[in-house]
Image 1 (cartoon, one colour):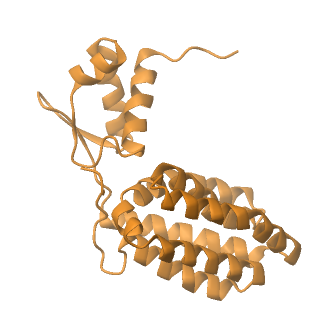
Image 2 (cartoon, one colour; image 1 turned 90 degrees about the horizontal axis):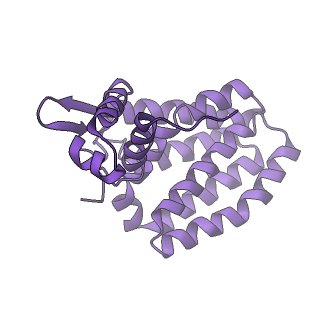
Length: 219
């Protein structure tokens, strides 16, 4: 039996969704009054939602001021990318020829959709497709534990992609070319080349080569 979400749950989902889609970028100060008005509820459930978000690491509450949306630190971005890199590379390494061939067939059209989304300036759609694209390499390994661990990093992955919008939009053809190269490596079962190209792709997309923090393109 499903239950209706509480007001605090709805407020949590609303604010968290705004953080994840870039509506509330890092550095934004959230007001209890404004969130409560937007959701037509009292401040009490909003306050509870913000405390929960603070416990989860998304905001920092300041008395009498509101809740400040946190920015992922360079260390958090790098460590998340390193774990995703290990899991995606392991998936390619463990996969058999039949699985790799099927993956290439499944993702060929998806790459065209990514390219179209970037051409249209539809970055939310590109973000969704890019996350599915990278997750597919972990699925190749057929290891449920690996996949569950990867999924725990999806929030950080989504934020990293969203906050790289300026860098990706500057040269969308480069991003798509890198994705196509990764798929070629995966289909061939060349996990060493895949790992090398993935490292270059992450470094270029998220500025990991110099430890720079990722900043949002929306202000």
